[in-house]
Image (cartoon, rainbow, N blue to C red; front, side, top):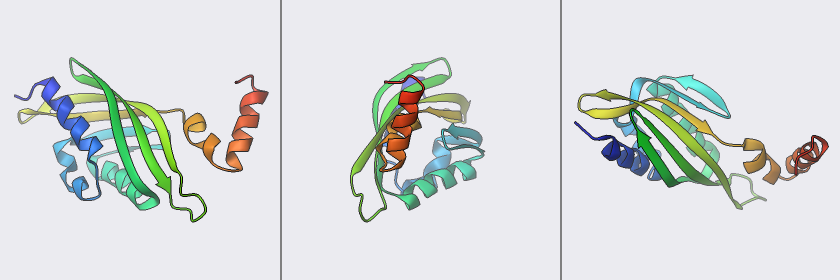
Length: 149
């Protein structure tokens, strides 16, 4: 049986090396019935999760995850990460970085751990919206109006 630490290392490696081609191996990481939720939506099933990642690759240039820390206990893993990407906009070729965390709930299956539930946490307003021209001005104004820094 794979240990939790081995599974954690395998998951971190998978996410750090994620490519459109590696999506064919998604079932080595997720259960077929897995749930995924982030700031942009919620889906169920490994095929729907694959579609989320495929959209990411279709809509962004050079997306990649950089895993910084991990905590594994019981049947759960908590990861902190940076997500780096470029927009597909001819006048905006900057590299953006979103900082966030993931909570993974696991189930043992056939001698390996698989993700049953994946929840991403990220402040999209601060990490993304405030950095986009025009929208960023509006988000910063709203933040000031409601007492933010």
